Length: 195
Image (cartoon, rainbow, N blue to C red; front, side, top):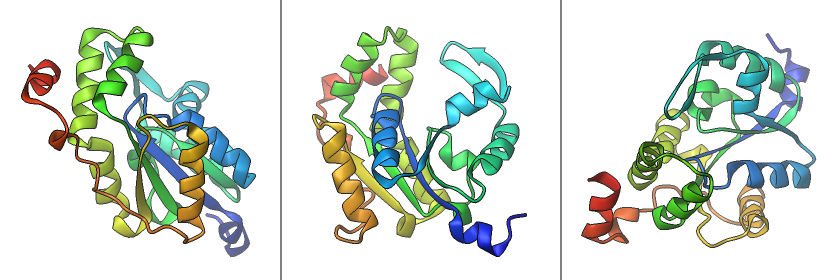
């Protein structure tokens, strides 16, 4: 159990989002800018043996074991923690701010193809982004007062980090729930993603 001094030192900013939205790139840059440590939850799961198996979409994490190791990794530190499992790993009291990165499904589709994702993995991740699953999970777990959503479509990581810093400093309000891809996609595009 962390003591009061350790708790005062500890600051965790989380970054989550669908694969391909820029979590690692933005997270590393933000950590460097803030002089925080960088914690990749996927990498931590691999390093600590918190993998239960694999399926066609990737590895399946042991969230209980990963939660334990993540707590140890952030204890008394200033950390930018990155991963789509963020909402399953951290408690509300441990996270100061949750950044949810969003990206147009059309841009994500190109990113997935360049990464050689299989058709099923592409479809699943596209559906997750269109439906805003990571944003929903973050809002449900951490509450609107701790969540800020950012659209990374067509933007470089530096401009996204600049906006995140402005939210941290209180220069920009935290906004969440404003990204709605369903309004921007045509019926034939939705059929392609969900059909």
